[in-house]
Length: 538
Image (tube, rainbow, N blue to C red; front, side, top):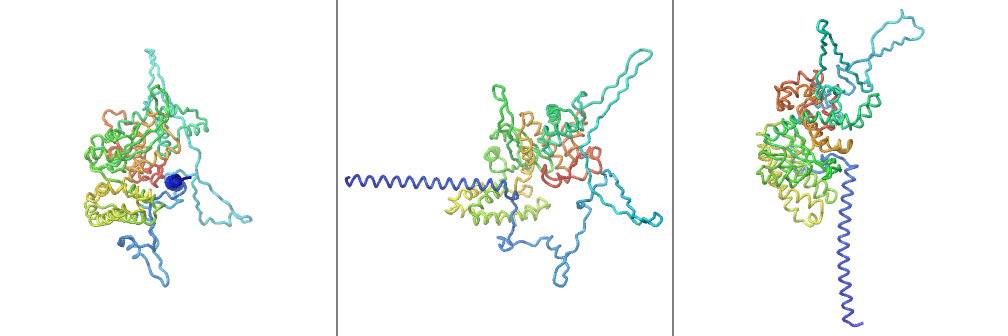
């Protein structure tokens, strides 16, 4: 073997060694990426769902915390006694919820009397001193009843003509075999409590009631079609608001192809929300840029969303002010804690301080919020921006997939992230809209899909009406039931029947007194917050 051939062989081996080193680095990078994915999904399945950060007593804040009014009040209520501190007993105000085990007065009572006398003692020797009362909540299977409408037919003896009164009107036509109350109950169970229609049909069967799933579906779709103008009116009102939250969430939907065959694909619910007005769910078949334009139409205010490109591009082309959601910014740094905990915690400290300031300003006027944000939040943002610029050049950030993603998510969009500082009317995040999406997520776990695009449109209508009713503190069952009576009134427009306007005109007439305060006005979060758990069917 010649010297030249040996040198060639050595060079080939070096080349091969470099190739193997490159392959190994790629494999290790791939392995690291897969481990992060596994860790993410394990956390989604078994980890804490809350993004709230715990403040360690051993770790000082990046910024000094001012003493809150609550803390000062607690100190005033404390009484020093010898070697310990005893706090005064908390008293319930009229606005507090009754303790568990205290039941509403409107519930019917079935009394069970236990009159057990001691053995061997005559009745004459006994004196009833008092009665001990124990209350327990009882229940029975859901009660259905038949509305038997008797129409008396008269005959005119002189003319021989018969007089037959017409059957009462029904929102879906006189031939409908179930009352409006029943149909609304089916709708509420599906879109408020996420109970699929096929399970409701099985419940009916267990009580000997034979109603097909097709009939339940047909009634829901027909009623949704009647209510569609009201849902559209809510969307129109939202577009006229100065600030709109927007998001999107996928849903499996049965779609027909060119040959008319149905195949399941992915459609999207696009919720838009405006505080004080309502939430509107709009079904669209795709997630492309044009859908944002179709939904927002003439909107010209401030758009709050995540950094999905369709929102960012549309805001730029439509010359909208765009506020980037800080919940999404925070979420990326929370993910980065798994790979770079020290640096991620530093970033989260700045974000946590921003949210602490926002919480302290809750309930304040927009003007005061603007002043305090400039005074308190702007210095935090300036320091965080300096941190981001510095971190973006660090090797441990550049080489870390999750942390580099978190930094590159917010840094190029810094102007959009800081828009809220100068306007107290702009929320810091898109949390309201994300909470509005919750019913569709819970629904997907239960009824899995929409069988058709018509069904998806129907779901969007009921999510809109129920979610908007809850925002105004309206019991959704009585709201929808009252709509069935007023939807055909020619004197009323769809705008008159939106929750905001309906509450001012018809609320006291439609909702029983004992159920007017069970829902606190606020945000639509179906199946989540305590207010939702208080919604009862009659």
